[in-house]
Image (cartoon, rainbow, N blue to C red; front, side):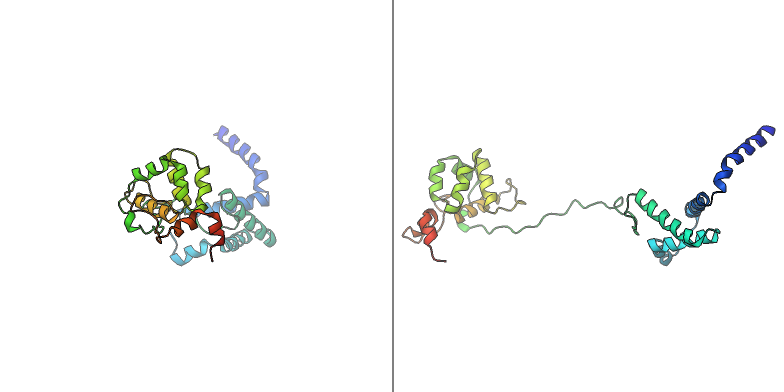
Length: 230
């Protein structure tokens, strides 16, 4: 018993300076009041809304400190400092009033990017990906002769395999990025884009002709393009 009394006396002497300090006592009372209340029953919904408001928290803390015989101005300062400090230490903004919902939020994996698909030209419906790759893997100079002047520079500067050049060319002409190359409708879509650029894909899948070859000339002759009526 004597040892216990001696230990208690030493402990009191150690903590007495802290207990007589009004600032330390104020923080201690706030902490005990707030976190000891976790054993309390859940409040009604309308009270939960109040307790989530930062400014209401500051008002309540000010009253707690004032009742605890702390100076009124000091009560306001300490309550604001306590709330702001806890918010910052918790990774929220200084005056954050809402709970962190990101821990419970799980994004859905079923969403899909929706972009408009290009209408497929009827004459290009049966074009295959192999036909397109063969087109870009053949005589590129011959291909450039039939390509719209606006795409000639792109085609001449694009390097890589026939498949890589085809994909880069199709994306540059507006093929949506949500379209996958393994889909069966991709080749007809690309073929439609190609004929819009002036490329002759197959005997049937090709740009329209006015019978005199003027359409082809307008797309391959820079002077004709520059002098064309707007």
